[in-house]
Each structure stands twice: as C-alpha cells, then as structure tokens.
Amino acid sequence: MYLGSKAIPMISALALGASALGAQAQTDIKFALDWRFEGPAAGFLLAEDLGYFEEEGLSVTIDTGTGSVNTIPRVASGLYDMGFGDLNSLVKFLDEDPEQPVIGVGMVYDKPTFGIVGRKSLGITEDPKSVEGHVLGAPPPDGAWAQWPIFKDVAEIDDSDITIESIGFPVREPMLANGDVDGVFGFTFSVILNLKAQGTPEDDIVEILMADHGLNLYGNAILANEDFAAENPEAVTGLLRAVIKGFAAAIEDPAAGAAAVAKRDGTLDVEVEQERLQMAIDGNILTPYVQENGMGGVDEERLASSIEQLKVSMGISDAIAPEDVFDSSYLPPAEERMLQ
Image 1 (tube, rainbow, N blue to C red):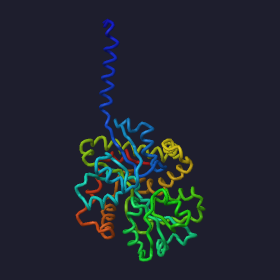
Image 2 (tube, rainbow, N blue to C red; image 1 turned 120 degrees about the vertical axis):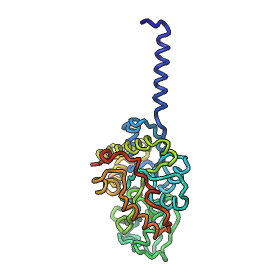
Image 3 (cartoon, rainbow, N blue to C red; image 1 turned 60 degrees about the vertical axis):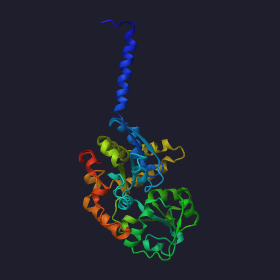
Image 4 (tube, one colour; image 1 turned 90 degrees about the vertical axis):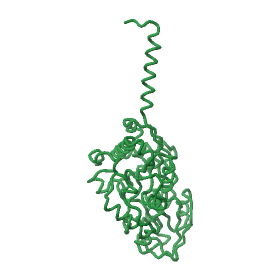
C-alpha cells in the first residue's frame, strides 16, 4: 500500500521510537574502581570493550578510585551504584554502622594482595619480624595498611619500636626508592613494579605477603549499594557475569588486557601493565579454589573464619556475620563462572 509523502517521516518516527525504547531498556551503573587504571583492572575494562556489558543491557561508567577502603563509603552513600573494594574493611565498616546499605556480591581477589614491600639494603627480609625497628610508610586509605592490626598480631610482630609514617600514594614508591622509609604497605603487584620503574634493582626488593604469614582473609570484592541491588537484581547479576567474562578474556590474552588499560591512560607502559596483570592473575585471582569452583563466590567457612580473625585483631563485635557482608544470591550459576 502506498503511504504517500508522509511515509518516510512516519517510518523515521517509528525507528526513533524503537531506538528510544531500546535506550530506556538499558540500566545505567556507576562503578568505582579501587585504584587507577592499572593491569589488574583489565577484567572490568575488557567487559566494556568487548561488549559484555551491552549484552547484559547495561551502560556502565567506570571511574578510577582512591584506595580500596575509600570505595566502600562511595558505594554506601549511593554516589556509586557498585564498586571494587576491600571486603575486610567492609566488615569493619558495617560493624561500626550496620545500617549502611553496602554489601559484597562477587569476589575477585580470592587471595588478598596485601603486603609490606621493603628493600634488602635497608634491612628488610622475607621474615615479617624484620620490620621491627624500622620505618614503614602507610597511605591511610590503603587496604594493606588497614590489615596491619591483624597482621602484626598473627605474625607476632613487636611494633613497639616501629615508626609508621603516614604518606600519600604518589610518594609511596619514591620514598622507598630514596630510602626515606624502609618499607611500605600496599598491593604488592603495584608497589613492586612501581619500585622497579623508580630504578630500584629487582634483587633489592623484598615482598612480605600477609596471606603467606597467617592472614586468612579475602581481598577485594565487587560491592553493591543494597538499595540499587534490590531495585535492579538482574543488572547486578548481569554486571557480575560480564566482569567474569572480562577476566576470562584477560586470562586468555593478558596483552589485550594490558592494552585495554593503557587505552585509558596514555602514560602507562603496556609491558609493565601486562606484567602487573599477570602477577594478579597468578597470585590473587586464578587460585586453586577459583579453578575448582568458579570466580566470584566465597567459601562460607573461610569467610566466617576470617571474620573471627577480624574480631580478635580489630575488635569486630560478635554481631557481624558472613551474610551481613557478602550476598551470593546475585551470582550467575557456577557453570557460567568457570575460568581456565
């Protein structure tokens, strides 16, 4: 049937209407990383670049962070719908104010990367007790520094003659490289590579990984604002599914992951970020538990045990329970979370 000269405008209007409905169907998510665009963020960025968010009907804005502890109040306040932050600091945050609407929904660092990095030439060795009598630099928002009260207890470190200097992230590695401090707290894959970039010889760098010395905790997890999650459960599950696919892609092709990161920050060295990403994959993400059970979940007994450790060392009350800090109901089925 001939529609006349009004046919094109009518068809255009219908197309625009369909396009508008499609746009409305997308769920917007503001997501806060724990830190800058660096190698370990590749899974989140590949989820965007490879269209995994779009496949889930999501429009995700990913912003950099200022520390894995600071992500928590940003999500709780609703400034961000979801984010990437330290699960242990979330335990403390919720113990202090149980009404805060934030919860962990997906584990990423099954083994935490919290550590102290020092220099042999300044008297630090792989023995945690070697930090006694030394000066340590600690950025206040850092997740590793947040674990110091627990770590010094389980590692039986006498801190009576340890000097802690509060320092900013930008000067952390330069201060250690210059010998202004003997060791620093941080995510080890970040500190070590940044130190090497500062010119510190690799054989002078010492890593004390807290998880290897009695700290039975989890690391960074994907967090969600509970109000947002209750209103958009499918979107939360969709984001988790997309991010897990993003990390699977990063594991399969770390070079592509590093390139995705460097695309967001032209000052980055792609080879360094690929090395940083590989360190995170090998040490923190693709653990034996994850290989057997899939990415994103937690072992309930282990989580309960870690909370008990926090109760002893950080004064967490008996009121906090695993279900208060982690909700696995948003996770995709296990078969969709398997990594190789």
